[in-house]
Image 1: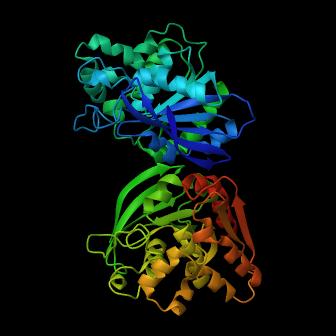
Image 2 (image 1 turned 90 degrees about the horizontal axis):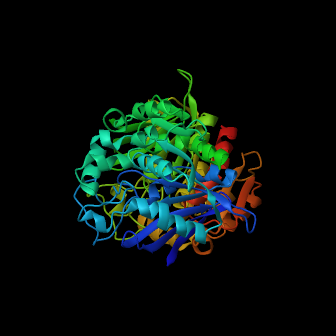
Length: 279
Length: 279
């Protein structure tokens, strides 16, 4: 069912690439898993990273510089691809929709509804695969991501408190119902009824939480030289939503940092430690 | 002359991509420079990283995880491309010769002798460009690299003690006169007279040093799961050469590590600190 494509020694543990046939998505999917050195039979906490538009499982795996601290904290790190893949999967000639832009939701509109089921893929199929096949404790899971993947991490965390106990994000899309990327993706995957979009908007979901003062802190880092900050990302909307329900939020705005992996690697250590502390 | 293609905040400093027209190579070349945060007017030590076969300036820049420690140690890091580039540059359909495989030597044989001058490019043209345009102290330079770039670093260090004061390597080709990669590259770039090859063989150069007991330690890391270890890399030959002239060498052989950047990033911190300590 699951094929190991390669395995590499990395900071005393192993980083491996896998491929499997996804029922949910109707295609072959790749992901990577980092397993730190650990005692035999031990079950480790696991954190899943969701990447952004145009990305695959490889962006985080090769560029994020996360494994040094994951090895130190004893965390398993999982990095899936961002969308269904294959010649039979419908696509458009666009970098912000279709392949590479699954948006971590389940599409309901044709022709996207056959393969674009990234929400169910991440929360169920991949989650089960990881818990069943690796030395992880399914009760101690966290999720984080970047940009579109920050949107995925925040919404999936808020909708699945039984699975994910910690969350953080780099430059996330926090309010897809209020930005062009979100309008395009939600409109095509879910249709034009904007009432249906709210279920995948972290800012809306946060406002509906009720009192969140007992929940763990959420960590978000945002670069102030990020070209997408004002039109697409709008972290202040999520900040206001958190404040409205007493959700603890550490939102750090960094001068001189943009939207890319040099920004992400700079603050990666704080995110890994954030998850390690909660889990 | 030199064009900045992009600049990114990174661990409190900046990582930038540059392009320039190389006289030595007769083509446009790219390189990256990391400048840590530093006091105004301060001149920093600089270390150049030479990448391996098939690589560009981007492999080290995105995958090596070096900038965190470089920022801490106050080192400038330079990562050039590995060969001349462009449609007019002669090439062969091979991953281990021609473009992506400049071998850090000056070719003497046609048609390679027009563009394949990576030795002069690194030691003179790029070196001058870096010293003139960045906040570096040209008297405090180090060099390191991986595989073909480890060969480049060791030979360039041994042949230019006036420029480079520290050296280290990951899985270097230490004896190109005694391995298939070396025979192919040296034979085509320099011709079939094997006497001429010795000037670019680190093991030969080391044996000719005379007493090297006063020179700084050389650091080499080698993975024991490296598929190229026995046929191409042969670190024991360099180890014997160092011993014969009393050159201090730390050659570490690591179980479970292969030839790739997950290996390199695991031991990168030790290499950056090695250069920082000497420079």
